[in-house]
Image 1 (cartoon, rainbow, N blue to C red):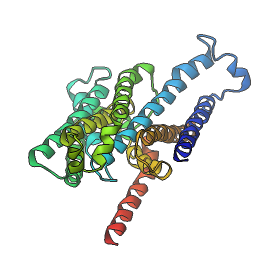
Image 2 (cartoon, rainbow, N blue to C red):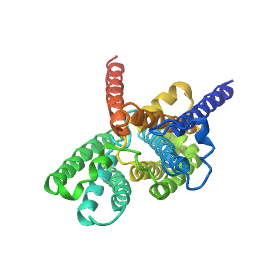
Image 3 (cartoon, rainbow, N blue to C red):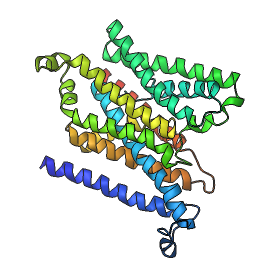
Image 4 (spheres, one colour):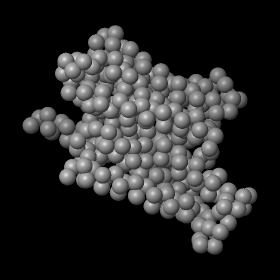
Amino acid sequence: MKTNRELKVLVILALSIVLISILSLCVGSAALDPAAWKEIFVPGSLYNNIVFGLRLPRLAGAVVCGGSLALSGAVMQSVLANPLAAPHSLGINAGAALAAALAGIVFPAASGISMTAALIGAVASSFGILALAKRFRLSRTTVILAGVAFSQIFSACTDLIITVFPDALLGYTAFRMGSLANMTWNQLAAGGIICLCAMSLVLLFSQELELLLLGHEQALSLGLNAPRWMRILLGLAALLAGGSVSIAGLIGFVGLAVPHLMKKFLPDFGRTYLCGCILGGALLLMVCDLAARTLASPQEIPVGILLALGGGPYFLWLLFGRSRRAGA
């Protein structure tokens, strides 16, 4: 019975993604009416360029980034046993932003260097926090607090760079707000490959992740090297977050909200739950991106702003709800 219910949830998510995909391809400044569909597959035509050159890569970017961020958050929350763990709360996003800002100063004329630097910064910041945790034997709760502290430090350094070198970072605002606008296949390629590989590895190691949920002592008694697998899985989570940042900039709260929402429909942790997080994250970012480019048309709202407006109150709800349960 549980298997049928879980399968229904995944099917509903997949069908919703298909429907939103069709809607996203059709809706925009140039609406695709039935007559326009005849030109879509004509190479070089206006509607061919709109669909395959603009909307389809943007749609693919939303699927990859949304799924990666949600899976990254699910892994972090599971490994650290903390429902508030997410890429932005562990300092990964802030580390990526700082690296992108530094790259803009050091290599101002290099094309695409900020996105590459963001990926490196995200991974480096996560491994730096893990190294400190190992060195000082920090608890899993303390790792979260260290991530918040590093996030503040990285953000302050980024603001300092922007203040001192404002002219060198003219295009940095869009990156910091998070946006899928002007997405290209080339921009999606490298980060997308990293995200898909990391996704595959997380699903492959889902059994080890389940054992970590039992606690380190129980996992060790079952023959699992808990500290090593903790580092491996958090490293994969960092790659997922870093790959997403390199594609679309600093998009937050997907990794925080989606794992909690999926637990309501897929309460049993396992590979099915992880797949649900991937589909749910993709769907959430697709819906938000569609809203971002249509709510204020012809102007476009960066999707990161919409997610922050919705995610901020959701984060507070989680925080206060957890405090009430702890007080009870």
